Structures are given as structure tokens and as C-alpha cells.
Image 1: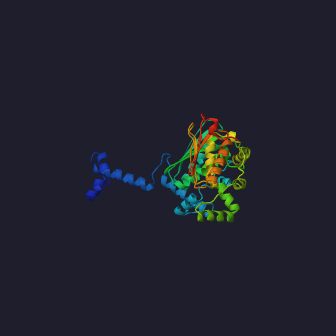
Image 2 (image 1 turned 60 degrees about the vertical axis):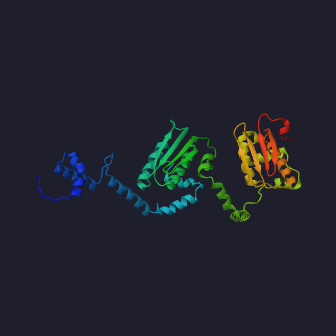
Image 3 (image 1 turned 45 degrees about the horizontal axis):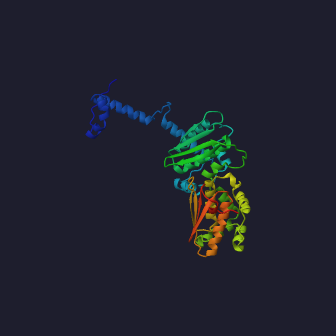
Length: 364
């Protein structure tokens, strides 16, 4: 039955009907019918691709979250407080047991299952993060990558960290690289031989747990580290930090031998000097030099064929400068690479190369 009504409509509302009028060739009655139909669908809840009403799904997800909160499995945390927690615990590894509270290792054993589960959890929890995965074929993928997009960057970091730990422990995939932008976090993985399940693989620790071992040491001796940091800060880091034997050698004037330095190097790195390239030796030396605090700065070049190490110091006494030159010459002699030494006030330059004569470098 057609019901006819006389209605008055202001021009502003007629303008809003313009898309519907154009669709119906100017037929106002048809345009109004389309408008009413659209409004009715909106009020009833729009339907998504799977035929489910989005408003109904949103309501179900809200009930799911409320249920977890009521059961005290989840806790509401203020957005700003959460970001503060994440930023101030960055570099510390999440406990494995905590990750297993989120992802059950007995039920989820394949990468696609992990991605599917996390995306479903994201939707239910309203985290607004989308996870995609790429991986090589086979029951045990050799390589994989995860892309986490959208959502809060801090929570994306936590999720990437959790997924990386899960893949490392359950699928022997260690982190090879981490790429972060404002709206995307990408993690690259590669298969590795995991012999000790009590330890964390190197890539995971470097990318997500770089402060873990440091924090554990501080926990063991908090007073020592607090006093040490306080002293360094008060003295603007103008202090030395070296092995006792090295200190004894400098004081006595009897510098360590090449053999002793080789042993020390192996104790520090866990490998003999021959296990490293010249470029790797230079990088390791830089870390030790800056940690010892003997000099004030260092400049290095690891480009093949142009390698050099420039040590910068504040010492003026000739004997001290000579001792430093002899000591570091012995250090570089112990790694079995030819070099030439050049000294000038407050600087010692070690240049490495294949075309150096025996007179250019130090041997013992």
C-alpha cells in the first residue's frame, strides 16, 4: 500500500539528498526511499564480508574483553602509563612463560596458526594490529618474516618481541633483522641450531634484549653499580677501567707479551684471534678501548684495504705516550695483521695493509 504524505524539507536537506536524486533521475520519492533504506541498514548494523553484522561482532568482542577483566585475567591500563612501561623496559626480554600465557605452544605449532591466532586475538582485544607472515615452504621453514602494521607502536613492539621469542623457542627461528617505522614493524628470521633451550638465541637478545644481561648484573650487585655510576658521573667519566694485570703492567713498565694478550683476547671473546677478520678485530678493539677509558676517543675504518685505527688521548708526558704506543702495538701484533704506526701529540695512528714492509710494523 502506498501512503502519501505532504512533507516540507529545507533546501539544506534536499542538497544532502543530491546523490540519491541523481541515482534516481531526479525522482524525489525514490530518493527518499533509498535514504530511509540506507539509514535503516545503518541503525540495524552494517554487514561485513562474511555476512556478520559488524556492530554485533563489536559487541561480542566487548563482552569478551569485559569477561577477561572480570575474571582478573586482563587489566585495564591507561594508554600513557602503558607507553611509559614499554619505553622504560625496552631492552629487557619477556619471560618465556609470559609469552606462553598468550600463545599456547601445545596447540599452536605452525607459523600460519600463530598469525591466525594473533590476528583473531587482536580483533577481540581491540589492539588494531594486523600481522602478516612470509616464510619458506616446508614443515620447518628456513626463513620467515613477520609484518606488524597499524596500532600503537609501543604495543606493536611488545607483540613483535613476544612473537620473536615464540618462534625462536618453538620453531628454531632466530631474529636476523628488525625494521621499525611509525606504522609498521617488520622482523626477519632465519633457522638456527638451538642446542641450549635455557639460553636465548643471539639475534633475539641483540634486537629485543640488549639490556638484559646488564640489568641482571645490576640486580646482583645494586650498591656496587649505583656507586660506580655515581662516581663516573661526578668525575665526568674521567676514570680508567682496565684489567688488573694491564694496570700492573703499566705501573711496572713491563708490558704484557703477545702470548698473554692472545689469551686475554680469547677470554673476552670466547674465540682465538684467528677466528676473526681484521674488520671484526677493529670493531672489538674499539669497544674495549672505549670501555677501558685509557684514551679519550677513537676513529676507525673497516673498509677492506683501507683499515686504520686512530687513537686519541689527552696525555702529554713522553714516557706515557711511548708506553701507550708500545702497548697497543703489542695488542695489534697479537692478532697477526701487518700495520704501520704513526704518532703525533695526542694521537696514535695504526694503518693496516698488505704492502707494508717489516720495518713498518711491530713484532715480538
